[in-house]
Image (cartoon, rainbow, N blue to C red; front, side):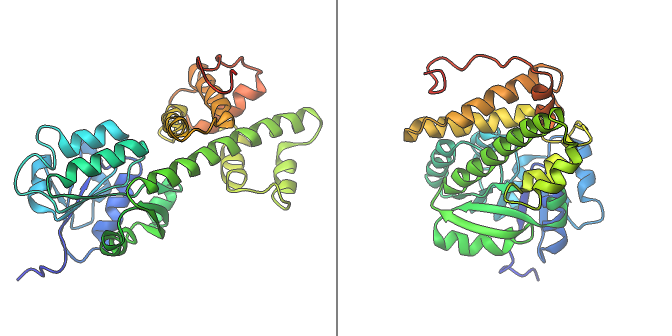
Length: 310
C-alpha cells in the first residue's frame, strides 16, 4: 500500500536548471515523481532515477499533489497553470503549485489569486546560483508563501537547495530574486569596466582579480563570472545569455516603476546588455558584456521617459 502521507510530486520544465532540480527531487523523494517537458530530449536529465515521464500535462495534474514549475518566464507559467489543458483546467488537479521560475511580482500575485479561486494554493520560489549548484542540490531558494504552506513545502525545496528562505507573502520571493539578479548583473558590468580600465593602465587582468579578491572589492561575480568567463574571454552558448538578463531587468524596472524608485543603475545596465545582445553575443554567456566595454561600443539610447534620460 502506498504511503498517503508522502505526496506525489510533479515537475514541469526540464531545462538548464529544471532538469538537474527535478533529478535531485527524483533521487531524494521517497514517493513518486512525475515529470513533463515539451522536448523529448529533456528527459535525459532523469536517466537512472525512478521519475515517471508524463506525455501530457494533464497526467501531472491528475497524479501529483504538489507540482513544481521551472519555466522561461511569466507567460509560460500562466499558460501551464491556466491555459487549455493546463494544471488547473480539469479534475483532479494538484493541491499546490510552486513556481521555481523568475517572473514579475505582479504576475505571481495575480496567478496566486486566480489559482486560489480554483482551490489551488500557490507559492513563488525562484532559485539563485549556477547550473552546477543545481546539479549538486545547492541552490538558494527565495520563497513567497504563507507560513503554513512554507512549512509544508520547505522539506521538498531542500531536495534542490541548501538555503531556503521565506521572504514574505506571495510575490516576495520574486522581489528578492529580482534584486539578487540585478545586483549580480550590475556587479558583473562594473567588474568588466574595471578589468578593461586596469588592463589599459598596465595591470594584467589576472593580477587585478587576484589582488581585488583579497580586498573589499571581492564578490561572487568577481570570483566566478570574472575568473571563469571574462578573464579567458569564453562566453559559451547554452548558458545564461544577455536576452535572459534583459528579461529579468525588465521585471526589475517594472517593479521599480510600480513602487516609485528610479533604478538608474539598473537602467544603465539594461543598455549595456542590450548592446551585448545586438553586437554579436546573442545567445552567449552574458559576461560577454566586457566585449562591449573593451570595444567602446555605443549603447542604445535610454528608453523614452526613463529616469536615466531625465
